[in-house]
Image (cartoon, rainbow, N blue to C red):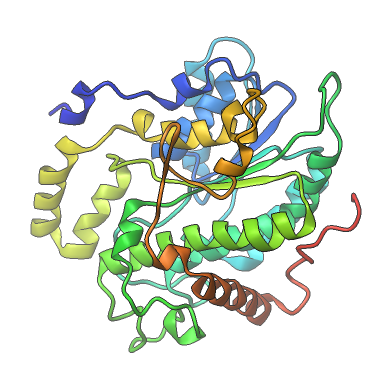
Length: 355
């Protein structure tokens, strides 16, 4: 049955990228082999960017690259990179390889994630929702900071000014359903023991907490990395809307076959399709309104913004605006990475020189 929401006029990622000439720009999309991430990657490729698509399964990556190439006329520069964001050692290895091989990184879209699903643990023994949806991206961005910093300092040939790299994290309005206990004050909240807080949390609670983390990361990153160091960068978070992607199949894992099938049948007709769901993220990544290059100088308005539709800035939950919780999350993230990979696994967020 065709989605009811399809009858409503909504833009798509491809439409939001029209007119955005991304030639000589490099973008990275995690989770770019399916759903929203696939449409985001396709929109970037259509605008002539060099597109790096990260995902866990190689077979999905090769298929996605082929589909994107077939859907776009003209040359397409796209590369698939296998990476399990739930495996911190692999994330570090992949990030360092990208840094060594790429000359620039203009746009980073954090889309990969576990949907509304039951509790499980990552390779590192951490709640998988938290590990994939937040912590893996935290480390990946950290290891790629020197590359983004270099991109922010030197314009490409023919460009009038240095680029302002953008980091766009896909969150969700479901972040408002994160349990009040989501303070990120200790490892016990997110480690993978059978009797910890995560193991007893509902599927919606686990997902909502990870989406809250996406918003808190953006808030802390803007205030304590970008602004503190005067970087020519921008970070935003987006809500794609309720989107029908493959993640709805996880309802069956979370709630059982019967109830999960019923939830799919009831919710999917009212959801956006992935093309429509990609619009807010593509807008946040390429719109000249975001960095003020449209001549209206509204970059301060959009720095750290929560974008729920193209050109629409919304106010997130009180927890997402809590500086103490954001600081807790940042400290916990650094502690977990150091515990799993060693004290030198994270680079200094303050970039002092171009490397």
